[in-house]
Image (tube, rainbow, N blue to C red):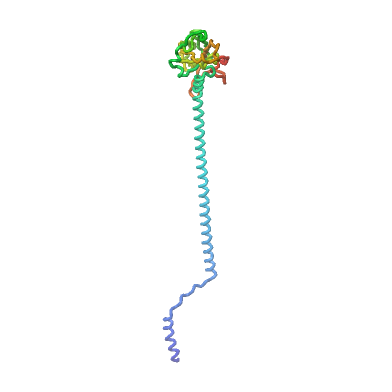
Length: 283
């Protein structure tokens, strides 16, 4: 054995120990490449699913918000409709409730439909001074008439047939009502004057008309009326020759309507309760 071989055998291990070893590279096999590809594909698919899920949730949220806005708008519209409807109903009920008193006040203030005047401004002291009787200013004859509906078993008559008055002169008259039934009854009286054109000048200071009159079974009451004919009657050319007036009262059985107002029973539908000069009483 030569010296060179012996030297080489002794030095090779030392050289191998001094030279750093390179890390071994992984060996790419077909199986490992396929596994990595499958893992990457799965990650991408999962990310896509998450994105689709997020988009679906966002879409559902928008739908819910849209439905909620529509519901709130519908609720607000219903609330507004309820308020408007309630206001209309209240207005109609109020107008209906006030219609009868308003109509009476209108008739009393204007003498419409033969209704005697009840304007309080005509009750001043200068209006209640009788005018002097003269050939051109004769006394006016006021006749009294009375009747009651057959639905109201009352006897209703005037205590005097007529009174003669001068313009501006107050006069007091009485009617008598008797309840002939065996039960308590409520009556209400309507009235008018004839001819109707004198109604604006026929003023009542005290009257029992359009007021609840409750009579016990068999009870009799006296009902007063204080009236006068206004002095303006003399200044109206259309009143020339009008010297005979009829004051007519009709008593009806009364009931309360839906508004709580007392209304006559026994008047034909559509007929003005003031129009008692025609046979409008139900028999």
